[in-house]
Structure formats: structure tokens, C-alpha cells
Amino acid sequence: MSNQIDSAVASIRKKGAFKANVALVLGSGLGNFVDALSNTTRIPFADIPGFPVSTVEGHSGELVYGFLGDVPVLVNSGRVHFYEGYSLDQVIYPIQILKALGANTIILTNAAGSIREEYAPGDLMLITKLMNQTGHSVYPDNTEPDNIFTSEFLDMAKKVARQVSVPIKTGSYAGLNGPSYETPAEIRFLRSKQADAVGMSTVHESMAAFQLGMQVLGISCLTNYAAGILDQPLNHEEVMETGIRVREDFAKILNELVQEISR
Ligand code: HPA
Image (tube, rainbow, N blue to C red; front, side):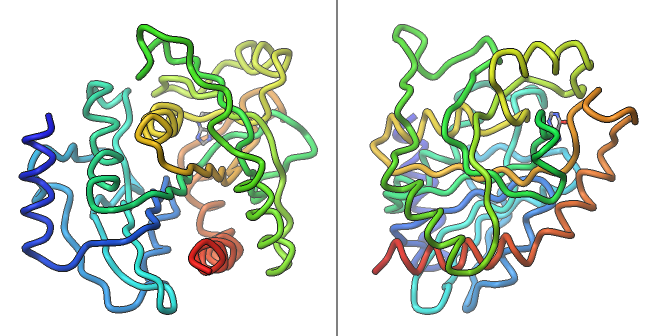
């Protein structure tokens, strides 16, 4: 694996500097944040040795190197999911690449369903805890860590959100395999276990990043009420549309957060 990572890094660095302390992973509908970067160099995931390529709508799939103000950032616009048939190793490989490119801090973003009435579609939620409901783990022989998201980093994100006047919630994220959305009964179960949001990504990436010694932050864009919370069906278009609606708020927070991290 490390040979593969070395050769991926070598191939990436042929295209540009691709060196930054801060990395971002952009989830469903949030990929256009790369337009906020200046001086970008872009590499399609398909051109990076070993990199898994997503088949899902809304995940364009490129590694972007660019600047927010003066701050260099590495951005994975898009990700692959376990349900696409990739192994856990493949799901976390992009995180290993970001680390190998110099990132010590990572902000993982996703689209998620809200399990609480008071967390509405369009709200952003800082992830405080993970509930790994996938049946797979990057810690197969060990207890999974419960302290991935530090109060220091969470407090910084809350402060930044206040500064840019974007309200932000906090809560637990339950990661399921998908690809189907949950049944209302599953959502009632998760709710009874104090989950606040549900999605199909982020748990393994967060744990892999933590394992690599990175500072990790998770931000969910709540795109819909989870199944059964409202008396209406949900669909992927709604998820995409809400992503589009909250882009501006999301961009404000990410931009200011990256500045604050590098101060
Ligand atoms: N469930 C699971 N994953 C999701 C949802 C949901 O309701 N919304 C966006 N991703």
C-alpha cells in the first residue's frame, strides 16, 4: 500500500505543488466549493494511481489544489462509498493520499438526513460523535475511538460560524452502508439511540484520518428529514437541491475556518 501511495504522490506532484496543511473532502452536492479557490490545479481521480472513482451523481471526482486567500488547500471533490462496491481500504485511500501530501488537518463534509424535527433541511451540523453502523471498521482488532472530534476544533468551528453569522448545530452522525435510504422504523431506532443525523459516508474516513494523527472536523449538510420524520418520501434530487441552497453558508464557514486554522 505504501508503494502505491508513494507512486500516487509522485504522479500528483508532477502536475503541481499539491502541498497543504489543510484538506477538505466535499460530499454530495457540495463539490462546487472548489470554485471558491484561486489558482487551482485539478486532477481527475481517475488519473491518480489507485484512486477509486465514484459512480454517484453529485460526486464529480477530482483532486483540487488551490488557495483560499493565501492559504493552500487540498480538496477531494467527491468520494466513493462502501455501497459502490469499494473495499474499506479503497474508501480510505483518498484520506491516506491527503495525509501523504502534507495535510495534518482535515474537514470532512457530507450530505445527511436529519433525525430531529428541530434540525431542518438546509441546516449545517458539526459532528460531535460517530455511530458506526456499517459493520466494518478501520479498527478491526480494537475499540473504535470516541474522541475523534476535539472540543478545541469544534469550538473553533462554532466561533467561526458565529463570526460569519451562519447558525450551526451539533450532533451525532450515524453512518450506515446504504445505498437505500432507511426505513422509518430504522430511523426511529437510530433516534432512540440519540443519533441526530444519518448518512452513508464519513465514519471510516474520519477514523482513518484520526488513526493517521490528523485533526478532524466533520460537517453535515442536512439535506432532508430522514425517512418517517415527515410524512413524505425522500429522493436524491431533494438532497442535491438542498446542497445547492446552502452552498453560500457552507462556503462562508469553510473559507473562514481555513483562515482561522492557518493563523
Ligand atoms: N439517509 C441516509 N443518507 C443520506 C440521507 C438520508 O436521509 N440524506 C442524505 N444522505
